[in-house]
Image (cartoon, rainbow over all chains, first blue to last red; front, side, top):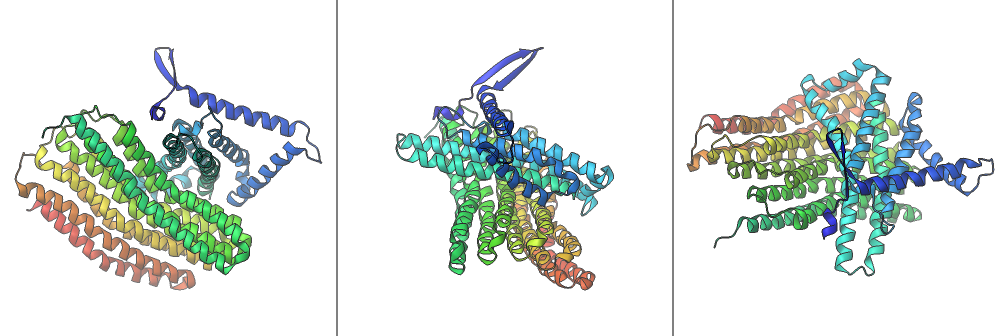
Length: 223
Length: 406
């Protein structure tokens, strides 16, 4: 059970401040980014009207997400589409990564989901202020009655907490279950099935949920 | 028999682990069972879509399972990870963490079942909308999980922050009270935000063109239904992080436990009641998309009024947290009055919250059909809500009497 709390760290001293980085999360994030960049290069290197296999996959994904973004956002805010699809691809690949031996999900570390939660929060509010103007944006905090303002602000902040902890809890939970059950059955029979369920199935759903909620938060702010 | 402190702390961690996954398993299982039942019924209705319905049921169940998975994470951490070489107050932190996560997962698990079930039913009735329904189901059940995530956040804080500076008396009651506040507080909001998620999914199956306004209404309705659980979380944070070393241990401990129970229990009713109102609002907009303006306004008014009992509970908690007794008093009457004040307001807040929510639900349903009588219906609704509020006000008066007069 020792694996549960093991956190590989890199510690730096920069200008009197001590920086502690989670080396596993960093390396895994870079692996995911590398795969995505490589895929993007391969898929777009020879764009033609008769698409090759990689271009077909890319077009399928873009098509699927373009529909979702068009349903959710108005004309003026559709430029958030690349952000939304990149967010999904990154989180999805991150959640898949744990299936491969010796690799682990960067989303298992709370810092990763929290970073993307905060990113989505700032983008949604920026889009809201830009679309509606600051006055209309601020007056929404005093709905339905003026004294509800503190609660509305806590409610907004709690969105960041809930969106990040939801992803973290599911991925962390999946990896704990895989670890504990594999330990109990001496790594026989069950682990591949568990990996398929928690890594492939739950991982895909939670990546999609995170992306859709970010999209919905932007769409609520801009309405 | 004398045991060393570490034995107590370790035992409390095991007990907390049992609370967490034991309570936490209730809701998710109920929700998933409901979804499976409706899925079976829908396949009977439209066997041609059986593959699609089965896929949707599995996705819905996987999301509803999240609340149970959160409970399992906290339980495993309590059983294997948290240190036993800790001051005795940690024993109560671990118990509180188990309660916060376990109780907190009940409502979310049950609530997530509603959208999953309605999506299966909708696919059987209107197969072309299946993509839209699955998306709405995922958004709805993900939002329903927010209250259980509040429970998980408080549980993590109780497990991993060092509370060595808090005195054992009355700190232990603050830690248990925090667990009760966020745990009980999440039950109502979890179930409540599941109801609009379910009715909005059913509404999209009926009226796919109005998907935008139905979803917006569902998001607003569930966000307001979650306010009671936010009250619970705020009380839990105050109980955990305020410094209790300068207050007399007796009878303050009863006040701290009472503060947690007061807001936690009182949040159950308004959470469920707000969910009823939001659910009918989403259904009404699906029936008459043009009614979205007046329906949303009336829904917000009804939900605001129905939340008054949790605000009373919050008020009683604040009084007990910020005006603790100034003198040491170990007599039984001193602690019994404080604890009863909390219990009185807590239980007293459940009924009015649900009742006023129902009043709001039927009013909103009618306004969606004929918008011209909007003002008249809202007036009747407010009068009716005020009357059903009266029992909550009795509880508040008795609580205040117990705190200040007795």
